[in-house]
Length: 250
Image 1 (spheres, rainbow, N blue to C red):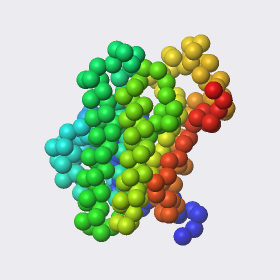
Image 2: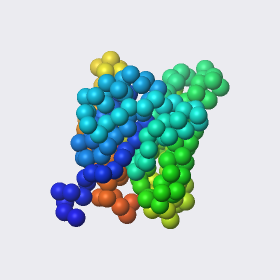
Image 3: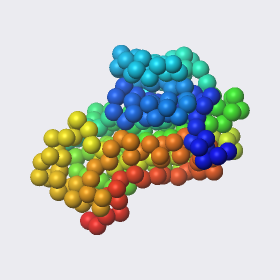
Image 4: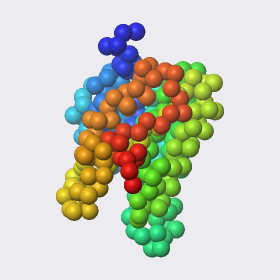
């Protein structure tokens, strides 16, 4: 297989959770451009449908709440065989640790960690039953290794997701299922633009060795590596894409 084709995903079906916008929508576009049939799945079905229409042939939209086992079962029943799972769905509750509620904790871990576990297990069971193998990419974060104040549930969930990735990789390797994690740093978006234009936000950017935030396209190479045959001997790996932020000086 040549360098030109090793990252191609022709003939494969990829399901992306949390695909109604943001990184999930971007990931769906990248995989679709690489030749995969993509299933955009999220609670906001209408947004997924609009995105699938924009992508055109080889894209479909399905409703999915990863915190609900019944929703997962219904989604996968409609999705058909899945060769690639991008476990991207995630939420956060931002407030000081002393003000965090058990409802905050349960909601964030229910989506970010429990949801990723249930999706990964359900999709892996299908891969094992078909004997086809496949690839699972868990979308973690540099906050799985580092912390910032105010997001105790999020950092705990992402740390758990990184270790879950390693556990899944070991147990599923004999079924030819690769499980890896992609850990992005801070990414420029409409939601955080205000903060990063503030003095504290600018100070944070200055602490990034590359002196800039990531753009979604900065994740494309790592995503395709983990989803395609280019990474066929990789499992249990965590690829960090953060401009050197997590290894920079404190």
